[in-house]
Image (cartoon, rainbow, N blue to C red; front, top):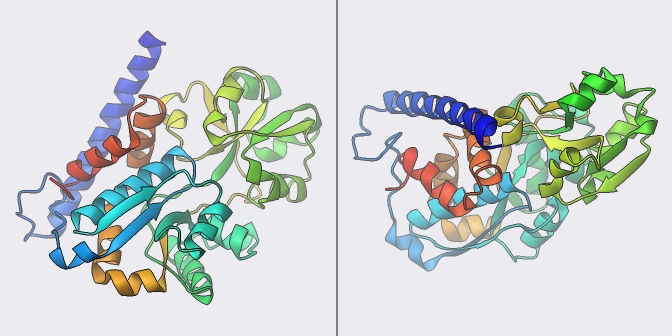
Length: 327
């Protein structure tokens, strides 16, 4: 593992660093007034003493990308002067939404595709491909429930059917449709809520007509280990997973050729009471700190946690510093 994986990680880190540098330079070119001494984009968050009386609790769902996002939002809001706590790893999207509605958290990052399909009953094929349009639809639905969602982050993520490259070669599959005729002999592992989600087991059964030898719910952090140790033939992965870039010779995802796994961009979801109490700095800060999050950067941040075993809070801090949002 040390020799080959280290080389892969080093090359991946260099690529991600180059992408980050280009993104930072581009952001700097947008505003000639950004000479504030910040490290990256020049969008240094200014502390507003008026925010010190507002307490916020930022939540997240229970997987790496969400925890990192939660930390990025929380640390950005803290830099803006808010009194911030975190309640990360809440659980599934329904658990997180229930926590928000119950006032246990002030907000959390949700994905537009997940919101539209899981909360509001949209068919995957009806989720707009345009991130802004999907975010507008989700915002309109959230508003009906007294909730508010902000603008989407740049990167898009989606569920995907993944397997080892060796297994894909053995089966001769490149698309999900290729599983027809062989799926009944294969085991599929996914998160517990996958059983009820249209962009997961339900879609694979109803949309593709696939039946599996066995579906086994598994904690999200085990989605790759179950492939590695042979427990699973197939596993539900995320398209922004670090492993798909850093270990591209080991894992592949099957093309979703019937489009049951809609792409989704994260949006921060909160409630109207929080928006009113927190003021305009809440939305401004959230939308500022997510500006640098394209797919390559999000994969690199995920890699620092999932592969390099770094602390999510430290990874979030480093991102915010590199982008010039905090010092």
